Length: 431
Ligand code: ASP
Image (cartoon, rainbow, N blue to C red; front, top):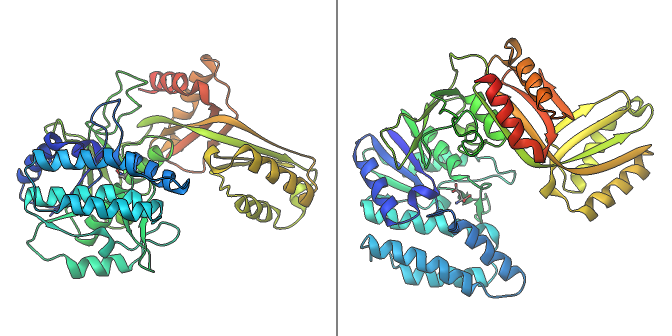
């Protein structure tokens, strides 16, 4: 059996959904479809999920979501009309949802409605059974998958039947709707693929696979034919957005192969993601921006037992979870997602740390990217040296290097404004 997940661009309008139908019906092993909310139809368009989050912010500010929700309604009504679907009580459902959003059901419920309506319409169009993700996917408070999920899926899914399941959300153990992070339908697809021990998990999107570098930066970048689980996880972590970095976790131990394919060009082979790859050395390069840096110093800092832990605990109090770290004899450097803390929060945190730990200095600055060169066997390849050389030749200063902590990547911290240039330079030197 094949589990097929279709991303937002694959279900953005009626014509795209017709392509989805053709794909699903062209191979009878495709039994379960996981769908996203309608995404952008063109570059000026808005994703339904973004509009839903906007609705929630309006309500948070004490305003009604009505004007933005009308745009959402229009999109769904248009899709349903074009697909000639009138059996899903769409206008009643839309009214209900709008009332719930206005009544303050919160961000997770609101955002999840895009996938919910999309799956209802598509299941009707295909004549496949709809399963509400809320009834089968249980999400822990740290956004990991609760094992109860697999029991529920096993009880619900009958052999020989075809299903459509909305991606991106489930419920908490307490029965409250909860979403994964953005792009989380990939995770739902993985969960379902594992639950049914699928022979293949297909991830349908609007590009013909995962590229060696972002093709908006490197026009000639090629599609990677095959990647390992580890490689895809590392590549997504440094900004390759095609496959959610947490989506490998549910199927990690199952060994189920994944293929990333293009809904608009189904004949293209796409990228296969397999447990282990036979290819060693660099497979891709990517950069993730939007990072800030904390630098702190204190003479004999590490003399005190457990100081790292104590400092990190304090960072967590201010909502900061660093993603990369460096330790010197008397100093620490951490990088974190700038969205985690405003300037005033950073300032308050620095003051508190300085006082409580008697620091000699502490400062936060912004505008960094992490550039990752990814490939299994990285420690035995010359990719690190080549990448360093390319950065040097292009006068790109590195403020951080992480080599050896993983055999699948080498990471460089650079200034964000040099990201594109750095990706291009490293790509040219490696591929
Ligand atoms: N619709 C959600 C998003 O835009 C989830 C997904 O598409 O996977 O992030």
